Image (cartoon, rainbow, N blue to C red; front, top):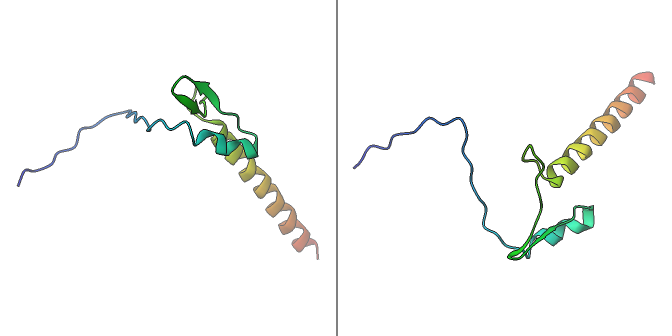
Length: 77
């Protein structure tokens, strides 16, 4: 049996399998697919975040605000 060793890295980039049939599923939540000759994809910004990440952040913020309002309302009773 061969001993497995790790390699220390600061950054690792992994590419996904391109499948243009799946990017359009995000249209229902306002995320537009970018067209490419090999199919469509959800584009990332300069930080590597996609519109899906940004949408999830917005949903989380809305949820936090709603919970805070409910908590404050409960405390006022």
